[in-house]
Image (tube, rainbow, N blue to C red; front, side, top):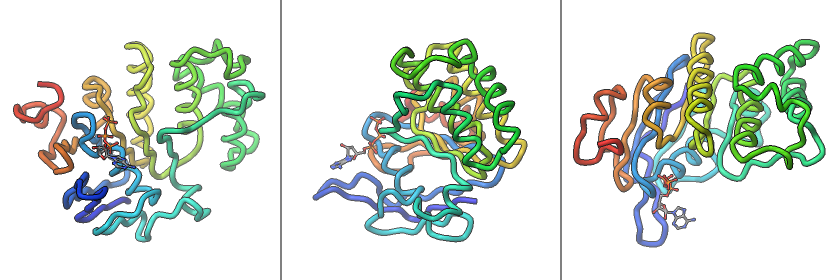
Length: 228
Ligand SMILES: Nc1ncnc2c1ncn2[C@@H]1O[C@H](COP(=O)(O)OP(=O)(O)OP(=O)(O)O)[C@@H](O)[C@H]1O
């Protein structure tokens, strides 16, 4: 589904990704973990074609990823930094609009109800974004990613601003996407989210791949584990 090979990114003389590779199969979830500044967001941007690496190659379903490509937008549900809401649409209207745009047709309303309930946002379905708490707004953005069919979901620190219960709901929703064959790539600082959702963790340490394994294996990499 997705592969990145020997990715190298540098800003001026600072190397932020140093020959990092990853591979993700359908129905699997890979989490990127590591300290602040270790290169997680940069690697996600490279994987979705938002940033070109200095060296290395990314393949998404056999082609270079391009957000402008209709097939990319059909296949990839994306939530990176900087996503915003329309101020004049309610929570339900946002999510239904995305569902409709991605072809759910007469099923869009039911899919919206389902994802809002799954994420615990159903009681705010008629609220406007300005009236949401920061965590609720994050859930709205996540609902818009999760309501639509996708072969790949890419989310950067999806747990940000969420409380413990909301994080659990998020992790369960990411996990639930996998049996249908959706692959999930996320960057996360939250151990519980990673343990619940991810099959494998790629641990980055100052731009280098320090470990790749199950969440339990990577937690055991004492020197660089973010959860030691
Ligand atoms: N536009 C830029 N110009 C210069 N340096 C940058 C730029 N963007 C990122 N960096 C640097 O690249 C490194 C990796 O940043 P990145 O955002 O990928 O890390 P991260 O692991 O996602 O961090 P965090 O956990 O804090 O979100 C950092 O040292 C950062 O300062």
